[in-house]
Length: 227
Image (cartoon, rainbow, N blue to C red; front, side):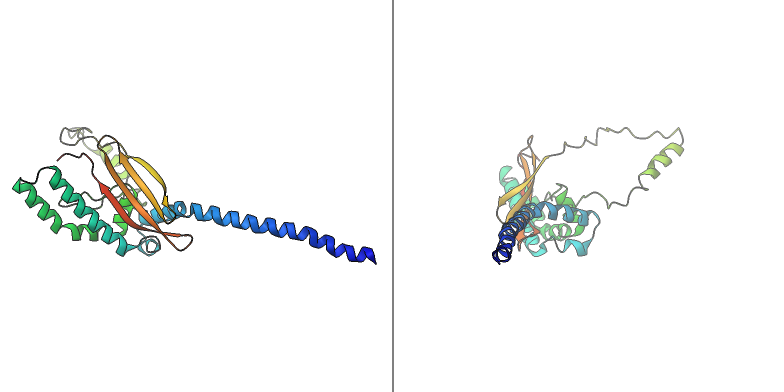
């Protein structure tokens, strides 16, 4: 009789530590996923932007907040540009007025899948007339890249290809240093820095819920760019 009573107690004794271990493992897994969630969001957001998938991007971009941030940051950048070049020059003042008038079209251009792709590739707006997103083309251009090479081979010898480093076309700038990390519990930033000029750019993600993140703001600082 005593043996039959002790058996249930033994089974309950090992079930409790197992349940605690499983619960702790689930908590640790949830914390780990919560920490990694912005990195996962950036990966999915960039894939959607490169594919120009507007529907998928809606899950990762807070367009009203991004528009407001772009408008504010471009306006402040133009203001700093004029102040840094001593706005007594009337041409600079005129350029600032023209630039301010172009802020709304520029914001509209960057609040698109093409614009988000450019922002995630470290190519923010410059605030100059005619500024448009210059993101890499969608990932379907595998066959297109072979055609120029074939046409170049079939071109007549009397029409040589232009030199790769023409005097009017400066060599492309070195890629900036890119970092990613938390700025707080609910804010995550992708930053691009060019040490030579002091140019700094950041794409800011804000937490939405426990595991969701959305691109909500940018930071623009052209540093010591002269022009």
